[in-house]
Amino acid sequence: MDQEKSLYKVTFKDRTEFLGGTTTEPNWKLCPNNEIEFFELLLPYGDKITLLDYEKFNFFIGAMKSFGKNKIQILHLYALGCKEKIVTSYRVTLSSKSDHNRYKVGDITVRQFPFGKEGIGQTATSGWK
Image 1 (cartoon, rainbow, N blue to C red):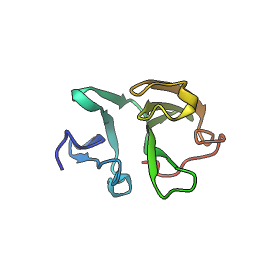
Image 2: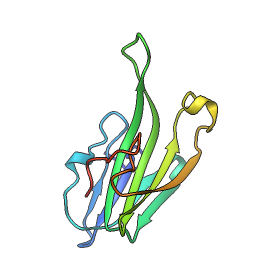
Image 3: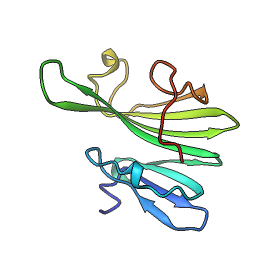
């Protein structure tokens, strides 16, 4: 899998790397649980969001199933970093059909939450590394 099609890249403290998947196969669960130096969310056209100096990292995709259809629409990419029990969430909007057109495709929203309340409805997310 080449970097242009990958969603993220993880660099570990031992300088090894893990190149993430695509919107259909994100492969976050396959990422080793080694100590992470930094996480890069890879955006189109070579841009990236780099998360560093965090104690824990997480990644997930926000999707919606169309009512009455079997089609799943990818709405957002989320990259999260946690330090001192505060989660910083970087959300990239991929579809303007979300949030009642409040956000445009490509918008990046940065928010902070107490650890354990970073998910939808202020619930905990799984998958922290």
